[in-house]
Amino acid sequence: MFKKICLPLYYLKKRGHVMPPFLILYKIIMQIEERVKQLVEEKIADRADLFIVRIKMHGNGLLEILLDGDQGIAIEDCAKVSRHVGFHLEEENAIDSAYRLEVSSPGLDQPLLLERQFLKNIGRSVRIKMEDGTKREGKLVSASNNAIVIEEKSKEKGKKATLEEVEIPLEHIKETKVLISFK
Image 1 (spheres, rainbow, N blue to C red):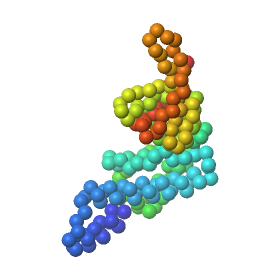
Image 2: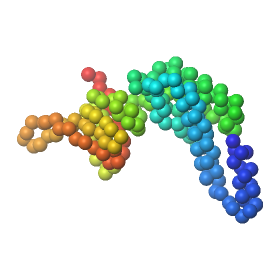
Image 3: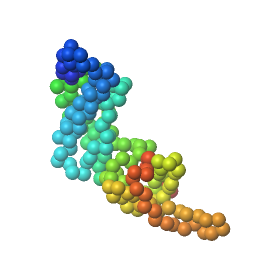
Image 4: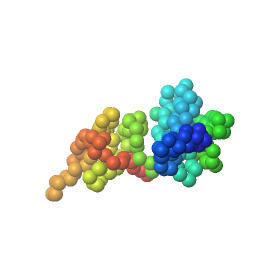
């Protein structure tokens, strides 16, 4: 893959155009991530309940694929995707350097990123970090592509705590994580 990009850059450089090395690396990583996305979509095409959460090629050689499902994802599904992607990347020699392929579901410590993840977690308690730095907690009641609704406890001095539904636009949210309950 590196040779496919660097050869045309050599010719651009001869004509007086220079591309910074970090842009070359960025372009290579984007191409790898796009190819991996195609391979994963190809493998899970017959499984409407599964979806891609994130694909990221880290600078340390880790190729991370996070998958989830509306009812969760089995380790066998992760293994099948890993074998499929690994086989094709090796067959195509898509990554020139050593890399480590990791296919998993997002852990409980990972923030919710997609609408499907929010929908899957309706009824669970969440902690929200807002863009302005404040934090909110409550039970996730509903989610759409532009906002979520949580049931939040509001307590005023001298009064009993009450539950109040609050709609929060996604653009005001920095991060949302599911709270782990041991009840």
